Length: 349
Image (cartoon, rainbow, N blue to C red; front, side):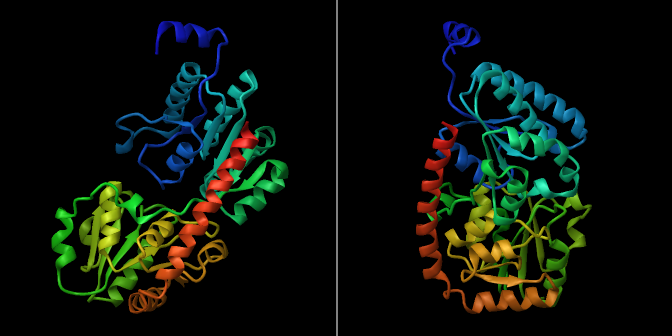
């Protein structure tokens, strides 16, 4: 940026493009945030420093540095609008204050985790902010209901967009380190989307794996987060560790069935959309919000070991049953997303 541009902005010159603020690592979570930022024409800014992935930095200290980095980014970029991924609510506080000072509209993209216990403790703070910002985006109907109770006229349901096979597999993923396990005798090959977070059903999947000794389960995520070592898993479970997005997509495509499970009731899982994009049969949690979106495209489970075993075998047996329905869903949902992006642009204009 030139010196003249800096002087112009610091003295109240033209504002820059919209900013999409993330207080997380760039490649963490689903692809929703990056896709949303791109389609809205917003510049993504991830307030995240090298070394934080290794842990050890207390959250309050991290939030302080994230606030400082965000303040610098807002001064430098002077965005005309700010979108914020929530939680944490503290990022929204900073964006709201920027909007108060500059007149820039602010929108919150509320992930379902804002309903988790630790973030419910801060609803006293988020609730008044929701009434004061331009737009509150909800991921599903249950989230929308709560946001409407806070301030109905700012709440908008924006489910994540469908993705395509070409998008997921655009960058080749090297499965070399996993090739021996993939080629080993036995079937089916089951891919579990997992982070070892509090809402992940990995214990239930381990129990199901013990009922299916001939199958092979590939479970993603860092097991150290749950205090596990590789020897703690059943013998037919491969703990893959954290995977890059290309390897993640390639491994999902190489397996026979996908498990997308959550113990958090009101959550729509992005990984189901990845399974649909790949035409991959999936088993997912039986919750109202997931059924409302994906009924007729896959199978649902109550997370018991027996249910998981039965649904996995059924999914593999009927793997071609949902292919046509999946293709139709992708076409319809991409049109829905494009229309809603246009609506958001208008409301934030």
